[in-house]
Image (tube, rainbow, N blue to C red; front, top):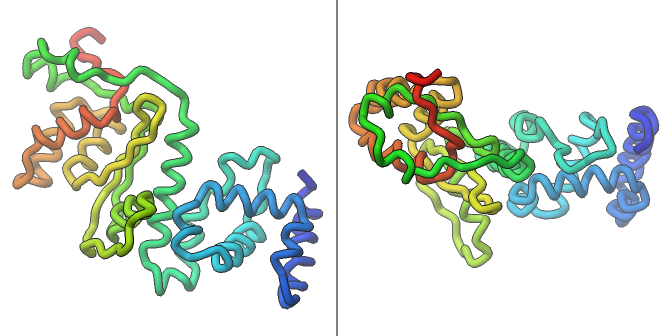
Length: 245
């Protein structure tokens, strides 16, 4: 990996020649730049699919120019790409694009996270309500989730299916949960209640505390069903009764 100054000189040279008949040829002549662009495409495949190859290359060139790799290890390159997209003109036409980029990032993090045992819901059969309520439930290291004011999760999930001919989600806020079960990444839409439960557990709330806060915010939602969704998703690694801490 060249030093930052060398990398940026190569980038400027490339931009200066971008009016050539086939500017992409220049990219492939610059091994370090091509590596960064390829890594960005690998880490944000859904964004690349949505905008198309040429548009993605132009976006990636601009991002790499502002945020060149700081390490020769490019497997997780592109932190901040979703936030960067928020300030790009393309968001005017595709207001969900930064959300899709964030989900791509969450998927990379889920894939790269360390392994750990998953909580088996069957082990909780003998627990009474009080013990259950006073228990903490740490998230599995691979668990990632997010909440979006646009239907980015629906759009992202639809692009996982190559046979999808048309994508027309309801324009509403929604969440997504990504877990890793049996070495496979599982992604699903979640509602506001599930998102609040997960947020509370991540902050260290007990199940009772998370349930009470969620019920207060969303009194019309079945909290038991929301908790069952979280339990069965593989999002949790353990359950610890605070009686024994």
